Amino acid sequence: QVQLVESGGGLVQAGGSLRVSCAASGRTFSIYRMGWFRQAPGKEREFVTAIMWSTGNTYYADSVKGRFTISRDNVKNTVYLQMSSLKPEDTAVYYCAADMGFHWDSWGQGTQVTVSS
Image (cartoon, rainbow, N blue to C red; front, side):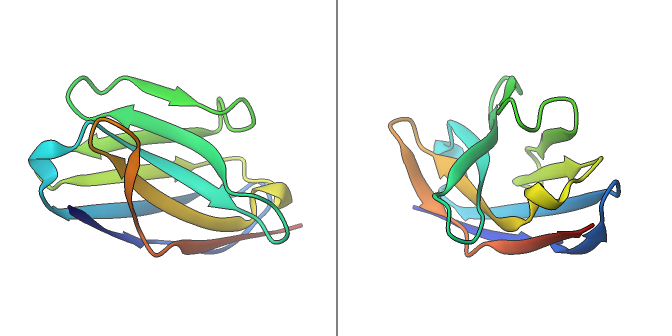
């Protein structure tokens, strides 16, 4: 089992930037990939981006390509989400998740990101 704790959410104006972090603890050696999801009010949780833990390969949802960047620090067992050119539609609770090789096994508590117009 891996425990995940997000931090860094907040309020930002449209066009601004924000970085959120996710620190993993526990069986971190079992991590296959880590990712970010988000859930806006009244909507289903959606995939945002993910990074392969060993290779660093990344992939993104079309809605955030070119604006968001995921990165990781294997020593600190931390994954980051750098968000730029933020839009009001990016407003959501952002969740960090870890995949041990089969599915998204562990989830953080979420951090609120609010983009004002």
